[in-house]
Length: 443
Image 1 (cartoon, helix red, strand yellow):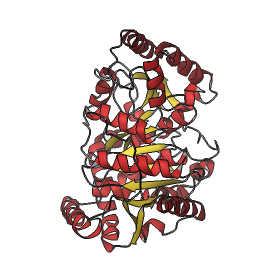
Image 2 (cartoon, helix red, strand yellow):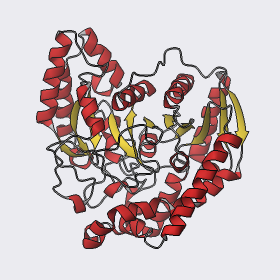
Image 3 (cartoon, helix red, strand yellow):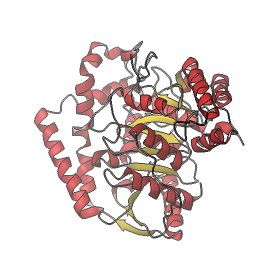
């Protein structure tokens, strides 16, 4: 077995069985990262001293049969907007160049206490404000499936580090799709928890009312274990998970507007496989979704610009123009309009629960309605960047607007994912549904 591309839970069980040593595996990941020709485009910085120290401690615990979790000794990467004490954390922005937090973010501290090994910090979009994954200011990671294509973002390096076998799993953040888009475009599983399911302390914010951290990995079980560690709770029971007898809702209408044939065909094939595995699939349309999506310009950019305005306007020349303009797009939204938009969104959320999703175990949409675009074209054509970015984040943003947990799974078609959205606060149930879907899809 190529242990560098084994799932995180496979590695954890191998450590438990004495088949795999955390020290050797950590050294193998560090060596693979350093030897990779695109290492500097994937990792903002490796943390070898920390990684080795944590691996030695995990090795000792394994020998003494007192491991702290299934993932004790497993090496993962962390997005560069998640604070790691004593290590430069810049969130992909020259505005934060040289920033060194004193302490780990709460989620990283919890993961360290449960024995995971921190390999380093991965590159990302500037301040996490794009779904395409491009960052000419620091670095743009290559798409793991085709280096000429956009990697997806903003957790671009997180996804690529796992897909290329440079980390067992990764932790990213998701404000409008930034875990699920790069996961889908790089052939991974990505999980966005319900909003507020994880502590935000120590995570550089973009828009706090939508931000949430989440794992990118090779399996639903990996994501479930990492989520449980960061949430400081026991992992959900996924044994025997199946879609047989589940009620799944395909959300028709808006998620397919302007969609390309590749993602649509992959989605339809995946839904057909779920139905053949025993899921009851129902197609639903609702105008409540259109109403929620129409509120996006009055919610995301105004909050992001409100948080970052002072730093941005002190040195706007440090930012890539398309990202700068995304932030400044929130400048002209008035406080009354912002408050009114939130009032409207809360009404939509209540209607969604009462009138749309009652009785369904999950809602299905194509994760991204387009294939990964050519990265160079996006860098050279600002209008195309804006068009592609909005369409890329269109479907994933549904879960952020409604506060829902959401999982993207590979479909078996390259760079095409299927997303399952659950009910607010029912993250553990969604992960079990996703595990059943993963088994039915067989990828």
